[in-house]
Length: 68
Image 1 (cartoon, rainbow, N blue to C red):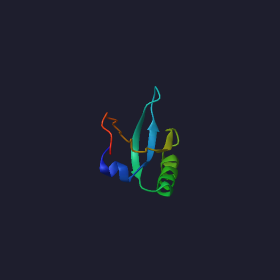
Image 2 (cartoon, rainbow, N blue to C red; image 1 turned 90 degrees about the vertical axis):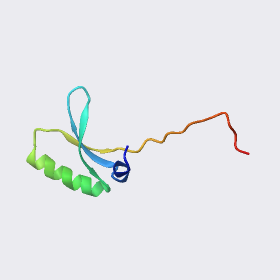
Image 3 (cartoon, rainbow, N blue to C red; image 1 turned 180 degrees about the horizontal axis):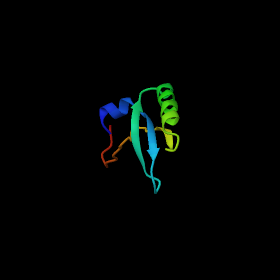
Image 4 (cartoon, one colour; image 1 turned 60 degrees about the horizontal axis):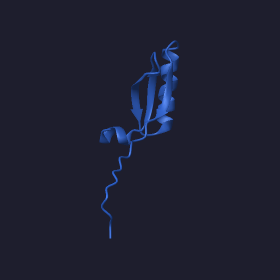
């Protein structure tokens, strides 16, 4: 996940077949995503859109070393 994607965790996604989706737009705030989702639903009534919080994944690596 890029730094820009980490700054914009709220996504509007378009659902496809086989439980797949594509990200249409990213936003910093949920309110912005909700407003844009309303516009998309008004213009494209047959396409299914949803809001998704795409949190960054945290990678932790455990090693045998211990901190003293």
